[in-house]
Image (cartoon, rainbow, N blue to C red; front, side, top):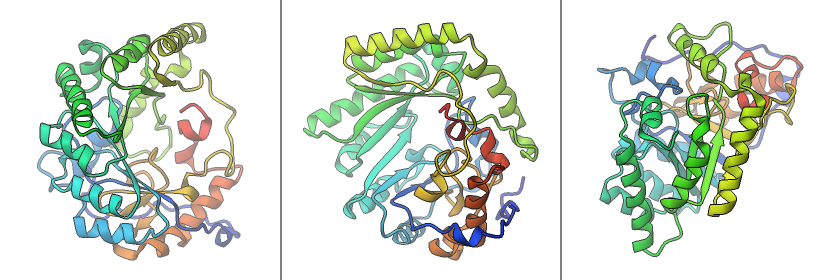
Length: 350
């Protein structure tokens, strides 16, 4: 795969595509870093060309970040994370401060492996509103199998460091939640994940399914091992009674420990079309570190779907340009874009 600019994926152009414009969104997600220090088994960043060893630093330029954010004057929420680990960016907290000074609620997802004492304090003092800590298990064996390259004990120490910094600065923010991707490998540990969260001062646990089946016919070859991994680990083919038992135990643990627990649906909804099925390309913008616009965070890599480059061409010309409008029109139709058909959000299994 090339590391240069990636051409937009050709999309059907319905005759009424021009009607599928949208006001600029109040929610924006930008990827500060296009690579990661881990090689998590369910994450496609491992296969992106710009994340390979020896590639140039995949960092969002700070001035480009400011210019892109200026292109969303209505923005109220900013998620500063894509596929990469945001704390690898040397100016990550400058980005947080810049957006927070505009009154924007800033959130991030992090694997917590790079959280130093200084960064723990900056999570509080920068104005970061929400921090989602990715922890996919309650034991070192399970967690370290999934999050290749991470240390379970170190991550828990860093979680304690973050909670202690927030307490020392007498701050309610950032609000911290643990995010767990449920799969066959780890879902039996969900009750223990809830207990672990409570023990470490976290009162929200968000459990999600694997995001996508990577089933499109033109999936880039580099990602095909992801398709095999999802097929092996998805809960959608697991015994429903076993899932119900584990989920019930997790809910009971959450009630006992005072944890707000979110669990995904036990079975997929019927495939849905139109805005009720998915409104991501209307309500939110998702940008790679290069400024490439993608339909949503579930696609998450521009060599699967690319709607244009906002850093190069501007926000509005891309947001309501022909490629974005065509994508919205297709999403409203009985034949949604193929990249959406295996999506957990689209199918109601996220």
